[in-house]
Length: 256
Image 1 (cartoon, rainbow, N blue to C red):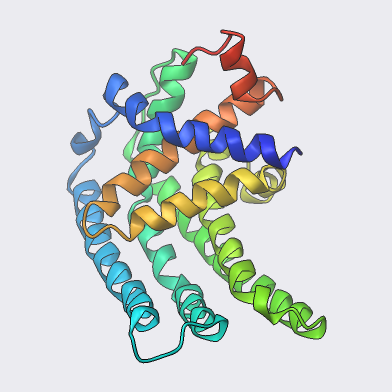
Image 2 (image 1 turned 90 degrees about the vertical axis):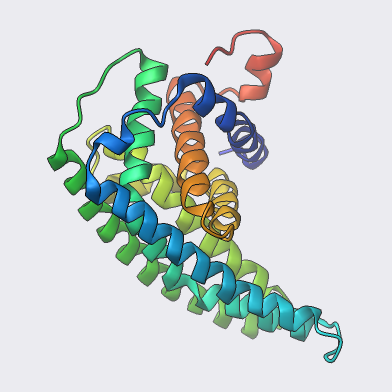
């Protein structure tokens, strides 16, 4: 597990994902899934708007000229961002049909296949995301509590806010990556074992997903589009070789 390789590779695939989506027209066919798929995107867009408003209020407090700019004020804002975590899982659940569809379409492109998806596949994916979100939310709270206690014992509370937000980023990235392993018929427990070996990439992808969710309305599309594709391309690459994508690109061996 090379953290620098994971981080750089994740950034690389996040960077090329918009072009990949556009070149292969991955969105085609999604709206034919049905009114439920369209409705979840609309609801997701509305929740993204509330998410943006809630988090932006915290940063407005930080930018206010009244309080002093110190670590305590920044920490209070980051704590607010962290404890608003339940909202992001609602976004992921509502947008799971988009995430699932783009994961399948991306794998079709890189593998040269043409997967037929049924309404049952979308329903199964939706229930799996509900399970993943509930699991991650509970683990996020437990892990966050343990980290807070440990940092308090060692007098390193100044690291608390950053550590907690990193935990949150990881579990967002986990949700995107799990869709890839779902296509390999792995149960959630087995998927989690593999994702833990890509913890740094999950944090990077989760961080971008978090930021994209904060874009009012458009975040409901941009977040699932880019992060689902990036996570799928990254994990597909790692399933073939442990070499960094940047090394292969330099040698002219990378083709997507």
